[in-house]
Length: 557
Image 1 (cartoon, rainbow, N blue to C red):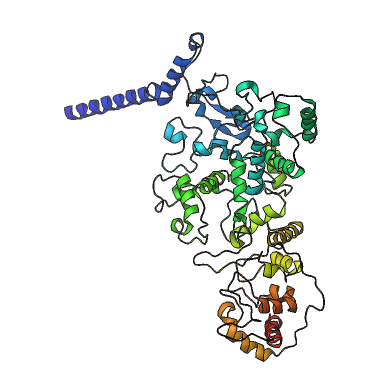
Image 2 (tube, helix red, strand yellow):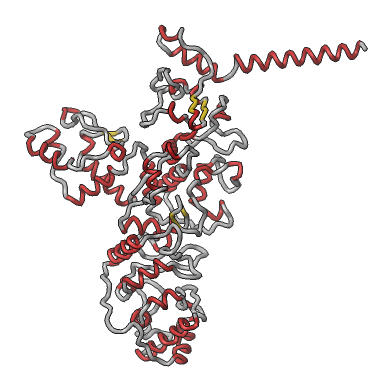
């Protein structure tokens, strides 16, 4: 009995000690308490007495949001003064929105209810939504916003260069640069900050007003830093200003995404191809469900995204994505954009107008000019200049801006190829696929291909079908000279499929005969009307026989 009493006393004392330790740890030793004490010591003396060390939180009942991030980041708490320059207590940067209206996690990720750093930042094991890395913080805008009509990276960069070269930064600030008086007072006047030009809107008559001020001024910044601007340059500047949404780097990253042909394989917001996974919420990837075995260094999502862009198949063994040969700067931009691919669960009443326009009215996230459309859907497979592409382990993709092709291909043939695709190849039916291209967009891509190749559409005269050759002789010639590249049954290999019903249905006999006769410079397709070291030149009658043989596949299909 005595031993039991001693054991009970010891257990009770141990339990009491544990409870005392737990209470002290919870109420006296928490890191956030030390942070708030340090914050209080940095306040003006008359404000220290009013500051209480306590849990702080932002509660938004309509959004079912409760975030305690401001328990440590006290300078961002409603009613508390921020301490500029301090990484923990600085006020929230001006991002139009008041964090008290939406909370923190919707933009930054992490675990809003937590007060321990690892838990709050989402780096604790098994938490599925870690914070977006600080250097990509503006990617959080993608949780709610869907930036529309983003141009290709070339158009974006051109507008940016012109904005700087024409000395617009002499008076206007842009993403923290410019708008300051220079030594000697040579430039610098009170002018609007254009970092949010797209949100605030741009005066359509800005150029005429600027030009009038320039012509009236005898000296000073109006005279020194402004002058006439060509219409083409003004359009490029306006395109650049339309991308300014107070999220430095984000629209540039999206513009790069729209220049690499990524939507050719991936859907984003319901628009794009089906070869690869849907990327609409790729930025919300769960690190607990991610294999980091092929990633060197930090085992976080930023490193995983970057390595996947460098060598897709080494990170995801079954991936069909080719290595695109991107620079490290391009990879960093695409990682930034990938983190922006997320969707807040907010009620539709809280959606910004750009997201409503995209999801409810079908407005495009990419610009509607031919160059941007081509870059968005076609460049990954056919090259940024239509030069064709070849990736390791894949069949080659044709050079669709090749002069020999464009000189004999009608716009109707190109249009039908884009609209109906190529069965059995990676070319989807863009006009028929859900989330594909609209008729006007297909027309603009066709026009852009003509501009790339510098070749106008050939005149279409005579009947579409005229070949009356010997099909049996054509079969013999095809087997001898064509099957090695196009396959014995025309299914395609090194060369494209010739038994494809879309090709046979939209190509004229003249197109087929001229392709065989002229070949394709810069490709493995020979000009069979000219002799080679292995065969004589084919006559017009022999070429006509090959065309007649190809038409027999059309009848079978």
